[in-house]
Image 1 (tube, rainbow, N blue to C red):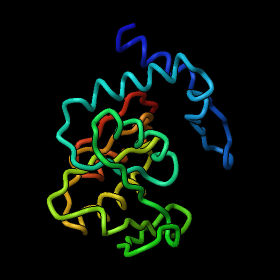
Image 2 (tube, rainbow, N blue to C red; image 1 turned 120 degrees about the horizontal axis):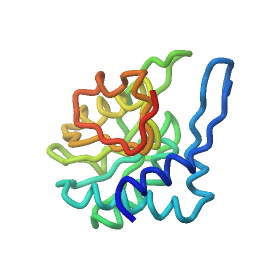
Image 3 (cartoon, rainbow, N blue to C red; image 1 turned 180 degrees about the horizontal axis):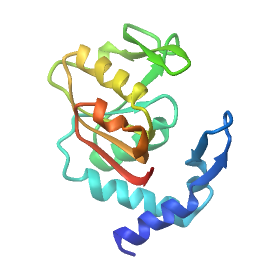
Length: 177
């Protein structure tokens, strides 16, 4: 199966829910891929084919769906995984970054023990929309002295122009306007 066929499998497996979580929103649900083994294998293949040539020291997954992809990537690269979690979810010493969402504020944290200055980081999540949470994660990573080499997502909502806010390379497999 070629790359285009794998991407089409992904696209076909992503569930679409109109008017969720509120009227006017079209929700793209990655969990449809996890219910379709052929699409799940295609997604894993696409991820692996993309990441093998990245020079990465650490993979960071965003709370919570980035936790599904990060460990897969880590095993392929032979590099550690570190979660970015919402405030109050991680033990030990953490650094925080508070950010504004369209409906309020939130705070991300990362454990400082496991990330050092100069570390080359790949950030992973399921979806890039407005870029708010991804930008917060980038700011959090940079505050530790580490370098974000790429943000990797499965789905990108291109019409919301999230990638334009990030200032780092972004790669997505399935795009919607």
